[in-house]
Image (cartoon, rainbow, N blue to C red; front, side, top):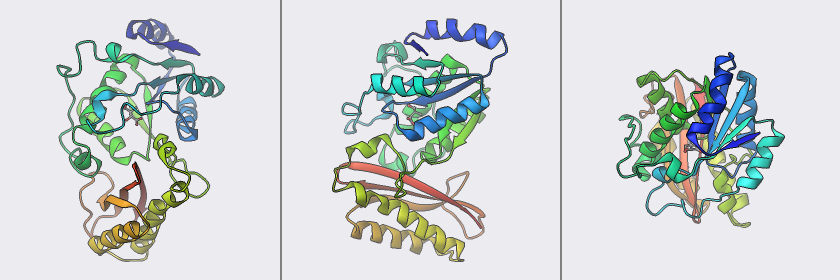
Length: 282
Ligand code: PAF
C-alpha cells in the first residue's frame, strides 16, 4: 500500500492508473478504523480496480466544544488494517496540506437544505465542514465511486445532494450499517463509552426498532411515536438529542402519505454522542 501525504504525489500516483482505464474507488475516513470501515473498503474493492482510503481528522467539521483534540489518532494500527484489507493507497494529508490558506479563508461548499436540522441543529457548521472537505477530497482523488456508511444517514444524503448539485462525476455508494452482536452501530466514538455504559448503548437501536415495528404495524402518529421513544431513552439513562421520523430522501418531517421513511436518533450517553437510524417502507 502506498502511503501518501501530499496532493501532488497523490495525483502523480493516480493519473497513470486512471489513464490506463483503472476504476478508482474512494473511502474517506477520519481513521480509528473498525470493522464498519473495513466493510466500506470491501465494497469499494467490488466496484473498483484501485482502492484509495483517506484518513484526515477534519478540524473544519468539529465545533469549538467538540472532540477534535481527543479524537483518537491511530495511524499505525489503521494502516496495518488497510494493508490487510488490500487497500492500494492511503492518503493522509496534514492540516496544512488540506487547508494551506488556513481554515478561516477556505472556500466553503454549502448544501443549503438538510444541513441545519437533526445533527446540523445540534452541531452548527458541522455539515459545512463535511461538504467542504469531501468536495476537496473528491477533487484530490477524482474517484469514479466513493463509499459512505448509511450510519451517518444525514451526511450521506447531504453528500449525495452536493454531488448532484455540483455535477461531480462520482458515483456515491451507500454501505449498510455494521453492528456489534447486540445491535449497537459500530462507530469510532463507541470507544469513548465506559464499561458500564457500553451494554446500555444498544437502547438507541432498540428504540429505533420498536418505532419501526409500530410504523410497519400501521401507526402514523409520528409525533407520539417520537415522544414515546424520547421518554424511553431518557428512562434508560440517555439524554436524547433528537428522535425523528423523516422522509427518506428529503429528510423533511414525515407525513402520513410518505412511503419511504427513515427513523433517526441521536443521544448522549455520559459524554458520548451516539447516532443511529433504521429505514422502513410502507
Ligand atoms: O464520516 C466521516 O468519517 C467524515 O465525516 C468524512 C466523510 C470522512 C469527512 O471528514
